[in-house]
Length: 183
Image (cartoon, rainbow, N blue to C red; front, side, top):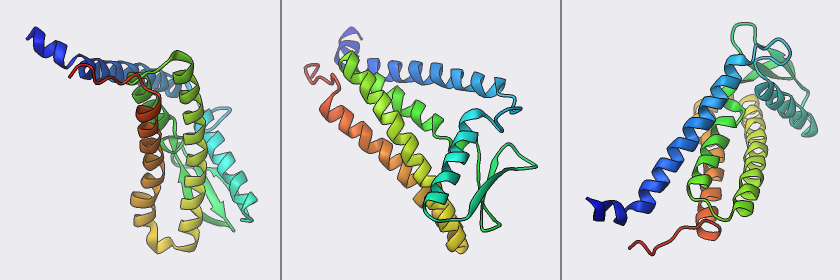
């Protein structure tokens, strides 16, 4: 048994580190959501910010858009030319995806400064790509509403999860302390 643990030490360390970091960050995020009452920023600060910034990007691309509180659920409505096109819910704010990204990078940690910089830069990149993803979906839904299913279930996740996967692969291949000496 000891030889087996020694042989797979790096795998066990990765799995434990990943799940501990993921659990702690997810718990902290859940506390944040529980204590966000929505009185100032509806439904919560990050979701509200993402909705506002998505609206700003739509304006930058020449669309007459605005956001509004959804009357029946905790979300923000994205409206183009008076037409309700999409809604920004808590799951659209990229925080859960950033938590997943951070957990993986820490589980394959490299040098402290490099790891910290990569987490910060990667998180900002994921956040920005997420904003563009929302804008692409919103514009797509406005122009091609009959493609709603493909846009939301294929294109939408492909953009953000594809970005995270590429960031992970770059991290593992360039910066992590991944060793093959355990073989």
